[in-house]
Image 1 (cartoon, rainbow, N blue to C red):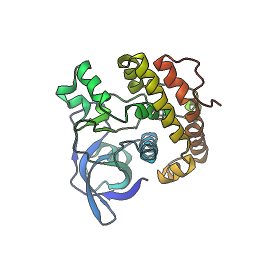
Image 2 (cartoon, rainbow, N blue to C red; image 1 turned 135 degrees about the horizontal axis):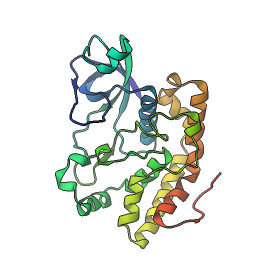
Image 3 (spheres, rainbow, N blue to C red; image 1 turned 45 degrees about the vertical axis):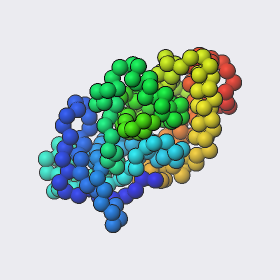
Length: 266
């Protein structure tokens, strides 16, 4: 679930990556605990995307760091462009636990195709993560959105562009739409035909696990109920509920199994 807390003063703004939302490395307080975290000030749709994707990922046992909905006070972050622009004294922010691993983008030893192929082959969650990205319509799984530690340790981060995009509207939420799947495309490139068949079986098993999730409960655990209008919440819940049934055929298309009856399609 998304835990509630607040951001403490003294966060340091990250400025190295262009195009990244206003993000601070700081400390959050959750109950009686203080945790090192990345604190992201996000527009409303991106905040919802992060929270719901975080909950769904953790509900299906994927390596997604703990997520938090925290209050951040303008008096504690007086140089915040977003806080100054809104003139709000308090704003909600998404915080994610600080994992002590660099992104794949910053791993200089993993920049060649051969090195990345070895990385993904050693990662037990590769197939289910590809299926997950299709389920949540996340086309933004670039190397900066994967954290890499020791052998087999890879984390999924940054889901602000999930659910068809960072500014989605109800009309965008079509369960059968095809979105770019970067983890799936890597499977299509690197796996040989017998391996693709095994990968397809693993993806299908993952989808069956996804389909068992109570999506209404997930939206409550993610606290998106308080962030969306009733029509938007209904549309997003319906999208997640219905889209899961067409994940396997889309993965099959990437792997060359077009038309194979791999699961119920509404």
